Length: 245
Image (cartoon, rainbow, N blue to C red):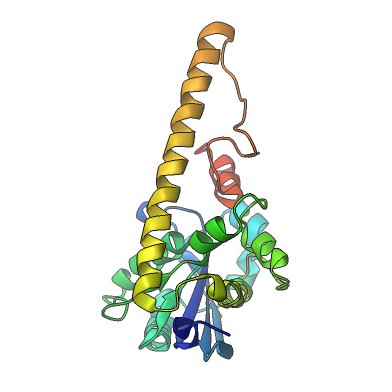
């Protein structure tokens, strides 16, 4: 039986973007919102967005979205009010929420808009990292597969959003029933995970420095992480492709 917060109105969000750094001018190229009510999908909304800048090849490689797909599509400001209206009165959900939240806040600020007052975010990635610990990588599609949830179009916004919502609902019976308790648990786990990542990166950098001092530079990768210092393979692809790695 679904936990009480899982039956609340949810708005599950996903963005596809030109890159990884909204502060450096990267923009949203696709928005997806899937609404859940009483634990079930009640509405799907999605839009391709003209980013008002060239589309990097790495963005196309990751998402499959091309310049031709974006030709003639609305700019973000043209859909911003409709997008924000979908979020009103709902818990906001995103897989790896910090990424999507950062882009959405930057895009809305360009339009002199903001997220609904008091917006509360849930991140299924934080919960999956604890509840599926030791079971393999934590990419959305992999986590979903372990739960028996299909993901037909990975790295497309509406499909990813819907999958993330189903992942959250599927994990709900292993999480606190009350929203406040859930938010407290999310905060604790998120802090512990951040500390663990920082510790692993510091150890790895220290090991590399030691090896480099004795044998020269190395590209040795951390245990279980095929993308070196970067734990997110999509981010790794972007960083390498744009010369930032």
